[in-house]
Every structure is written in structure tokens, then in C-alpha cells.
Image (cartoon, rainbow, N blue to C red; front, top):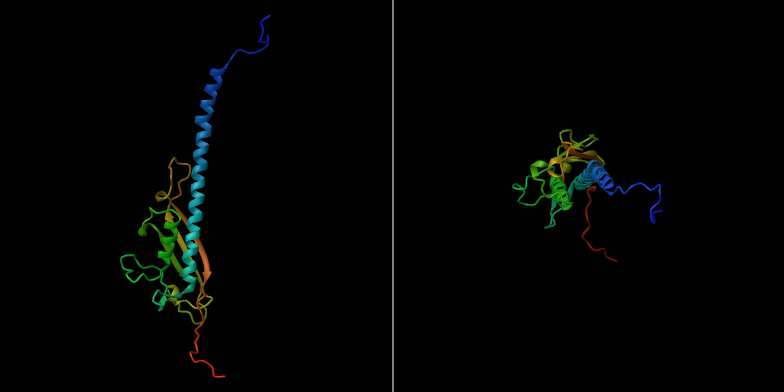
Length: 188
């Protein structure tokens, strides 16, 4: 009798196990890992675009704001950075700032499509209104943002290949009602 080994024990197969491990690792686990990574990146980018769209809609809902010098300022859809010498608030700039702040710094101004439109025209609203400042209180509008996924993806192995990532948010204009301030102190 041979000590340390049973009669029914199979011969040592460490080489076969190593080959099986390499096969499973390279043809199953690695593609699954890359697929999960790519899906995760798509979900992350979708969330970033959704948050950026809401930031643009949040700014548009104000319709008017006060600038740094204290003067009332109208909020518009879009002003190209080269033309915006006064740093006027606009929906597309708010979206771009949010996208860059979230880490999508390689997106250029022309890569991002921002669409602002009014969804209804209640009494007092102009049917030809195109900018947020032209809206009336409680008027519905939407902001849509679309970016090319190719510009923000990490890897390209063909699991997912959407052309764009889009999000649409619907809000209402929340412009303040006009008011006046009495600057006279009361006499008692």
C-alpha cells in the first residue's frame, strides 16, 4: 500500500484546471466585466445629462434674475460664449457649466444641443415667445439636452453604441409678480 494516496484518487490535473481557468477568464469574465463597465458609464452619463437638463430648466424657470451689479436681467435660451461679453444668463451656458462640473470636460459648445420651447400659451403669453424671459407665470415649458455618446465614452468595444444621450425636463415659469416697495418710513 502506498501511503498518502488513496487507490481511487485521480491523478494530478493542475494543468487542465489552469487551461480551463484561462479559457473562462478570457472568454466569459473579461467580456462581462467590460460590458458592465460600459453599461455603468452609459448610466452615469445619462444621470449627468439629466441633472444638467434640470439645471438649465431651473434657470429658465426664473425668466428674469438680478445680475452682479443689481440690475434686472432677462434669461435667454442661448448666447454663444464669444458673443456673451456681459456674462448674461442663458440656459445653454447653465447646462454646459453643469456638464463640465460633472466631469464631461471634453464636450464643446457645438457638441451639446439644448432645446427650449414653451408647451402652452395661457392668456397673456405671446404665441411667438422663444426665450424664457418672454414667458408668463405658470406657463409650461420644456428643456431638452442631447450630447454625443462618442465624446464621453471610456471604451468602445461594441456592446453599446447609442449615438446620443438625451433627457427632457418639463417645468413651469415661476417669474415673480410685479411689486413695488414703499421706501418711506412710517410715522408713529
